[in-house]
Amino acid sequence: MAFSQAQLDALDEALATGALSVKYADRSVTYRSLSDMIALRDRMARTLESPKRPIVSTAVFYSGGD
Image (cartoon, rainbow, N blue to C red; front, side, top):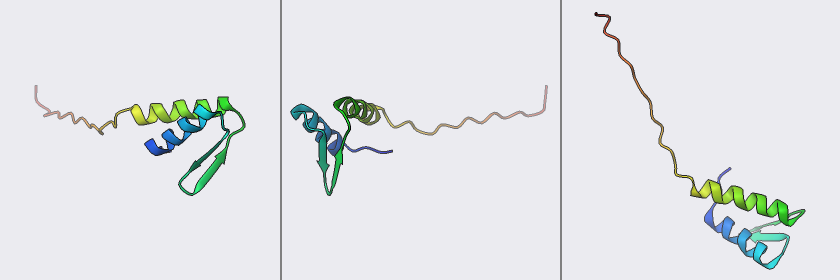
């Protein structure tokens, strides 16, 4: 799942106020607990901080000689 910085910011703002509901764009989510929110917040932050890894392929050639 892809997360945006705006989603992370909205979640951070809700956590700062102690609210269990987050509104982002035209959506609203109500969480069961602050610990659920914190777990998602940490996951979002890790996802957004991790660099995009390029796809790397390696080819090995064998000439059949000595």
